Length: 95
Image (cartoon, rainbow, N blue to C red; front, side, top):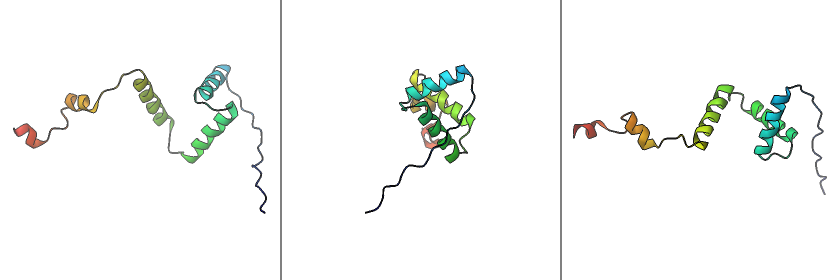
């Protein structure tokens, strides 16, 4: 019978941050349903390592979009097409 593998050993790492930033971190991990601050920070660091092409500008754009959706400041594709005169083919405009 094979022995069960034990989880990798963990090392404690200390970081410094402002109290305000720590409050933001704590609010965020709780909102997203993580079990602990450490679990949240590990997940964030793991994502940053696995997806280095994902940068701060991308994150800001994504968060802005999420806020617009949450606040109901979105538009249907039909509204956008109408505003920019999209979706009409040359044949449609000849009629």
